Length: 147
Image (cartoon, rainbow, N blue to C red):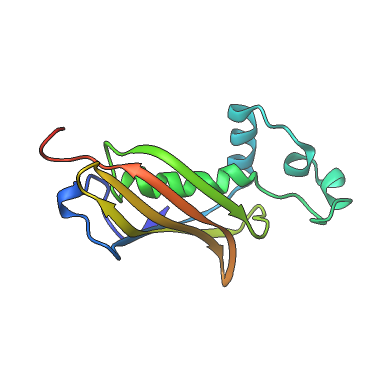
């Protein structure tokens, strides 16, 4: 994975509106197979070339939640990072991700509630110029005062 910042924690006291972090990851057949095993979602549109060829996608696609997991990786590793607790996430899947696609996942701070330690993040994933997923996350950020 390639990203723009080191792993770690950004405490709520240091988070600012407009901050963003991202990563890039190429989704492999192995990623899809491992996700199917862990999630128990073995829908053939993800795993069977012949089956998937006859769907609206005309080929295999990655699980949508595998793609969404890249958003979780940015949140849990970069912004806010280690110690962050997910409170909610909205997702809208816009286009499929296929084996071999490189996904760009980004989060951007849109609101901060310092009193409740809550951070709202605009989230999206893209393959090239195509947005494949967009949404919003609400997280509980770590704090130097309490953690």
